[in-house]
Length: 511
Image 1 (cartoon, rainbow, N blue to C red):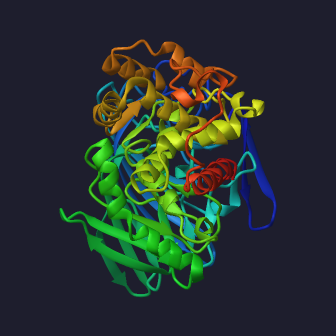
Image 2: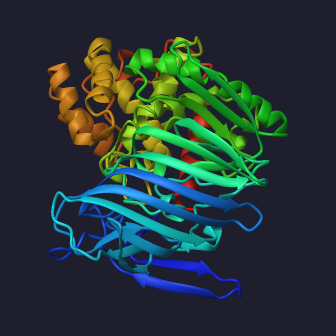
């Protein structure tokens, strides 16, 4: 979603609109927090000058009018002297306090600019409370609104951003925090969110659902979904809470979704056997009453459009989104250009699932993809290690991304590859990583110089040469297209799932 020069449009009751425009995020003067964290693709995503530890979010949502009112308290630490700082918010702020004192504020596109009553020194604690209100679906950013209205509620779900439509934040994966989220709505409706359900309290005609995520989380991964659901609760063998929810009266899509989501604990255990212990304290999944066209790896509880099950069971989309709990959620991108570390890894996990569930070896899926794409010049022109703004969710990031990991597996061997994947997940858990750091890890753990390998797979604008050094198996080297086995049974299913995921993510990023 572009934010080089942005126009934020707010729908008004009269049908008129207010449009504001701003340019590139610039370096801030001393004492002023930067209006962007410095992401090379989206320079004004996030903000500078402080580090958030916790969000305490309380919102009231009215389904018929789509009106949301909120009060969010942010606990943070100043990382520089601050006379002024920004938060990301598109809803209209009503009041702001900093450390209990009323603060001056103004709003410009996507930004809430706060001037505290007293300047903050580097290292000072910050408790910032913002009250705000608005109709999220009436607010667009460059003509785009990520807010999703469903048949019976709404879904605050999106990537690379959604937070600004329901709470103020430092909206970039580099600044993770823990979360308490309380949502009040009609008592007949359910609310799903991240983490563990703390309470569910009825007061008059309303009900408040309080969800808590105790592990650091990127702001875009925080979510809530309101609607009528068939909710299944349980616990894993080690006592971890499992909550899955499928919209009521979902027909055959709902039945298929419920059956696949019921396998969430099984899939998590299987992925943990490859990538190390599951990094969070709860798990599950949600399929709301809407075909919004994508799935998202919301931390602990991914959200899926029911359209993924329009043709029957689709376990591969669940495998994909749950793999993101390690690669994408626990280990998040440092910048959005590092997206291969998310999507390539989750797509490769689908191949592993196929291999270990008798539907086709990963090596044979690699060969099938090579046969399918080797003559497709356009497919190879996208450098997936740096795909460019607006191209993070193109198909090659998924398919070429998974091929790169299988080629790495072939090049360095199963033992070293497994160690690299587990070590990456462990050493960067609850933090961030770059492709450069992953390459350095793979070099060290394999005791090989893999520079030319990664150049060929991640950065070259052409197909890798089918050589041993590029991780091709013997049957595919030197231009050979002969394969000893037929196309794996899983290939068509995986291709369809990945095509849906990449197209869906592109739609999510352009909503």
